Amino acid sequence: MQQQSRAKPLRYSRQRERLLYLLQSTDTHPTAGWLYDMLKPEFPNLSLGTVYRNLSVLIEQGLVKKIDSGSTFDRYEAKTTPHYHLICHECGTIIDFEEQLFPEIDALVSKAADFAVEGHRIDFFGTCSACRTRNGKNS
Amino acid sequence: MQQQSRAKPLRYSRQRERLLYLLQSTDTHPTAGWLYDMLKPEFPNLSLGTVYRNLSVLIEQGLVKKIDSGSTFDRYEAKTTPHYHLICHECGTIIDFEEQLFPEIDALVSKAADFAVEGHRIDFFGTCSACRTRNGKNS
DNA sequence: TTATATAATGCAAATAAGTGCACCATGGGT
DNA sequence: ACCCATGGTGCACTTATTTGCATTATATAA
Image 1: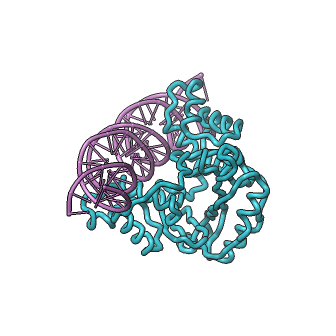
Image 2 (image 1 turned 180 degrees about the vertical axis):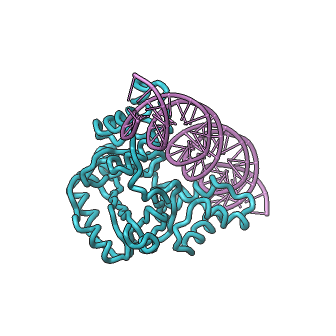
Image 3 (image 1 turned 30 degrees about the horizontal axis):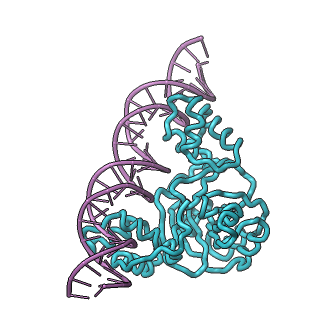
């Protein structure tokens, strides 16, 4: 699939530094396009390819996570503390859910299946309160 | 984001029927391209657009689920019983994990957050036993 | 500081997935 | 069996993401 090479030397890059900083400064789960637009003024010939490539690098480093919201584009976040996502299928909003549900889940699954679990992802799908209100609470 | 219109009338379509049947006949978590290739002999002018569109319809009906494996393409499955995925980041294999972990999780989160949870997804990332063996168990 | 190896970038082209539109097919009514 | 409203399809095009390649920049050694 991809690298298992932990030993890939990284070099400093201003684009990557600013990208990470930008992601860490927001809690809005941005898209690649939004990140690109925000960085463009600072790097007039920034390319989307660079944004995507740096996102991959940061993901490999564990500093960024990709969120598959079920929509047509992916979202990203730089929050490193464990949390889950509540994804509204009506408006697309992603809400962070901070409560730790089962700390022992990875170990449990590792043992039950013959699989070395290194991490997991939990997403909840449903309707956010704003959309329920707008629908007259009946949705 | 998309429809909340449950009331969309559906019509029979041979392509969709065969697509669903094909998906139900395998446990390999196929890609859209693989499904397309398999159906092509039966429908010589089938188009990929039709495959994607029918997958969406089936997903709305709850008969099919999309799996975001972190790789460059999505995978699909028609298994309707609740289960989770073990995704090997080395070879990309997806293994079904059948054990029910927490039946009450949706209700719990619905209450804790102000969000009407309708379903959830749990994926575990790590290394499968085949890859661990190949690596000499040290990975 | 200068030279050197190679990571990172920008650009363009390639892939994967989603969509508009004209035409074909299903299914309910007659 | 025939008509007709509208869902489904194929095709071409758009959007989102990834990748090859020549060039630029970082970091290490001389």
